[in-house]
Length: 439
Image 1 (cartoon, rainbow, N blue to C red):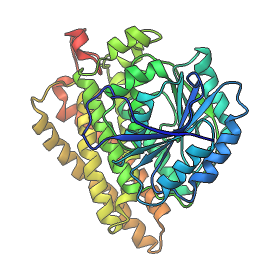
Image 2 (cartoon, helix red, strand yellow):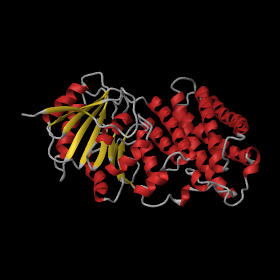
Image 3 (cartoon, rainbow, N blue to C red):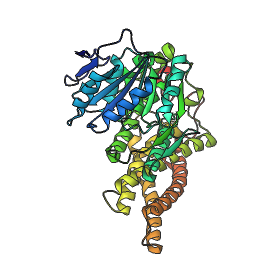
Image 4 (tube, rainbow, N blue to C red):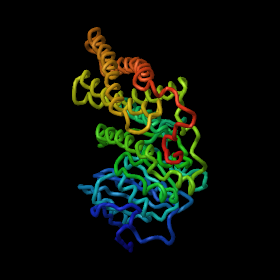
């Protein structure tokens, strides 16, 4: 007879609200800790949960080491808890964790922090990623070659099937990450990741996000701490029945990027200490310093411009769900203009502190109005010549116009807004993410 046990999870490293409690249900434990713990976070997945877990359980049963499957229920209100408990009672090394608050990141942080496995992983319940990539995903972690491993839909050799809108949004998001946080991994959003338990103990207490940005935050902190991230090409098929709110998720991700960039710029994250305990070496030199020459500033400006263009395209697609093309264009430009000025102020021209920030934003707003005139004029010209132009054509024309406006923006920023910042004395700059180390 199978015994069922319930207990409260261990206390996580960071204080949490009292409502954030977890109830654990599992079959009678096999002696010793598992090598791998695969977490499947779910919210109202009573239909897909059972076939997912059974398929995953049959797959990992062939692994040459013990693997546990943990169903992390984010406060489901349907029959998901009942299905999860039944699976935990029936299948060896399957357990169910019930959290009373929503949040995929919260569930992963909670379960990973309490796990006794050597390697921690997670995958989406829809199994969009082919399970054949699971063993390669964890192999480098078990050998000690890598610290974190991610499935990448953008890596060479990957095969991906998904709609055009999700493809554009995903690529824009990753381009934004590369431009703002200067990451080197290619795919932050694929629901197929793993990390070593010792890495999790160092990184997870620093992660603040409890939702979809959790993945990105873990990866950025790991990379900035000097850890090795291995990317595994995957076969991935989009779930057409996904209930993820793309608009809300995209807005939350952009807020997360802003918060994380600010935290790293302020130096309040102990990245140096993590590098000392787990890192492969010092922070890459490419991530420190701000170029002061025209070529250096132009390179940085292009990176910021590409990021802003990607953010603009993403926001335009999102805002057009609620208004006309002209309104979506104006709002998307306004939001990206503020972010563009702030990024160029710090990244391209090396301006630190808040002195003059208001004046710079006001001047940046004037430059924004010029950019809006260029893009709005392009949109009006398109509609005059082709009144039935679709969203794809509108986006292409506006993207080209936005690039042209970006060139004008650089000239004005360099010659007017930040004209006194074009030449610095050697050694005047500080590292972008750890200024306190150069104080």
